[in-house]
Length: 295
Image 1 (tube, rainbow, N blue to C red):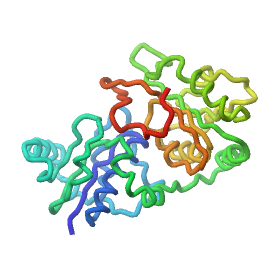
Image 2: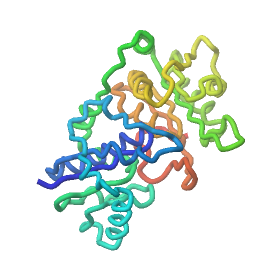
Image 3: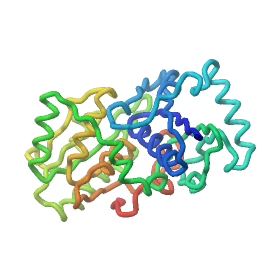
């Protein structure tokens, strides 16, 4: 049986994209899927991300040290990338994503023996055809603490809108988002036309600053600020998925909060701008599902 070894890295949203594309590739080609949950985090000294997919019901194996190309993994991956870039796409045994736009070549790829997959693959186009399977895989194991259970009850008791505000600060700056400055005002205005009695639950790495972006009175806004740190990101994602409607940030984290929600009437509003360089790419081909509202 052929094998797909997926290198998972980045924050929780990007980890989910890494997994989803690899899961689809393995499933449609009857290959066995292995997750490299180590190499993508071992040298992340800047963000210090951690593997977080154990909070989901993922049914695949973890890669062995040998499958992670140890010892000397960094050098061996470098050589594999370099050699495989010279080969036609369909003959590659190490596939590294080039650029951010949706690449349909991945859908027709057939592993020959062992295939290494590396990339964020940020589009539902890479896994839309296995959506029911993926939704089952990505059922979040709920947190059990009192604060999250109480917040979950509050969310489910009303017409809840999840609002995510992501800040990308540069050195010497504070409170910088890459979404246009009036995006949240326009997004709230759009939802107010459709669900005027909704309550807004704000998720952010800077809750107080995020609250100032929401032009609504305090009795209609709740800041969800108790899940601090990357290790509790899954709990915020779990709460998001229970909301009925979404105003997402320029962030793959809230992308998944909206996508994983099973609310039948959900409206999803997303930043509609394009940024094709820098540390927060956005708006590239395939990123946003066609039914989402782009503002």
